[in-house]
Image (cartoon, rainbow, N blue to C red; front, side, top):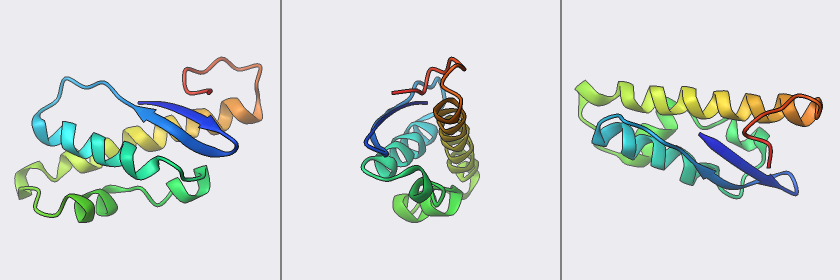
Length: 94
């Protein structure tokens, strides 16, 4: 996942995946939920919030929401670290 932040808010969030259609849906959901929010607000993006937003993901694919949430949170952490320490190179800095 790649984050672009402007004025303290997620301006754009993108991702690449080679996962199944459910992973694609969960990742799209996470990135759409993030747009326009601060990093603090984005802490609420987790498996439950993604599953609630998607409403109806099959039980045997619910782990896709967890993977999307974990990946998003890692990208968010990378941004916060690179923001605090601008000398650290990070692909999430925007």
